[in-house]
Image (cartoon, rainbow, N blue to C red; front, side, top):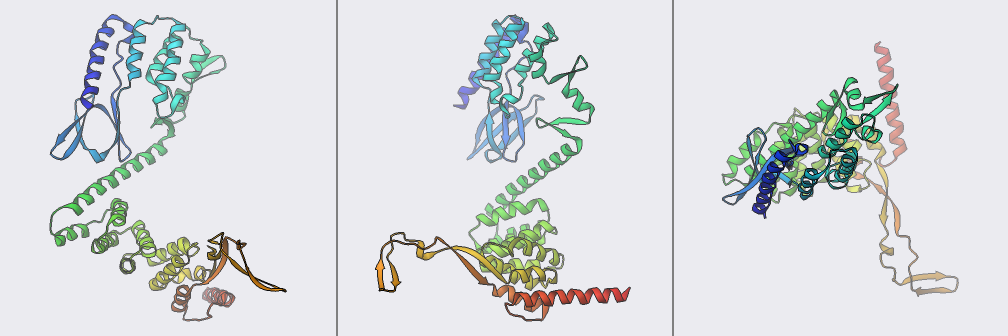
Length: 420
């Protein structure tokens, strides 16, 4: 299939060369290049070919400057090749007249057959349609429809190009959008960051699948200190079946000195299915370079109001282990929580239910039970954390804890005012 496409493109290119020499309207109008959309979100343009190298498929992109870029199949999201519609366009353009009506008709044809393939559909002008609209303005500079489509507006009797106006106000065109230079810088930084993450993802997968000794590979993972490796490490952990290797990835996250890595450890410590992995995360969170106060605040804000009672208790336990008194107020709020749970008695609509009345009791068919129930849970791990952090104990008496907490803050404020 690939060879047929390339042969077809070559025939079109040869025919196009003959047409160009005969008709000036299609001079400098080559077929659009192939577009390679990368898995990382970027894109490359050029002539694309594929070849087998052993068991691997290599995608080769020959760019307009003559450079050649080789990509593995997993680096490519998809390839968009020149459309049959463009070949038809070249044939139409070869026979058209150089008149306003002919150019307008061709611009409408481009809208329906070429521009619709652009990322923003017909709201975006393709190069072919733009060519015909600009040709109309050469024949009739005051053609309103062509002016509007080319982003002109009339101000004080003169046509003003909005693109030039935006450029004059400091905006630039980037990724088919008008943006400030600051926004462009941020978007480029984000694109560069995604590329770094994609590179790490490939490196880590290759390292994990290599045939070296486990001890040697583990040493390589222990050297990782780049924050761009955090997301790939998490993804590797999620797909890893070996608990031993899961611990290796946790250790690697623990070696990365960033708030993002600490938050990742918090999430794994709360949500991972393995108690061993969760305990290992807690140990990493206790390392000297980790900001335990920030970690505890993240845990409290993210999990103490969770709909899942188990996650509340796990987070409470970790906060106690980190010794973070800054989360005491949120722990008090999470002592007793209410949850909406499915009613097990309502699970079977056709179940028989026992009824009682003044006339006696009996069994009736049908089920009038509510589907959901409100469940009040006492969170023992949260209480244990409070006891550990405060050296006080008011059980599950939430109001007593709140009164005590308010009193502690009052005493701190009084002591602070005395120092002044």
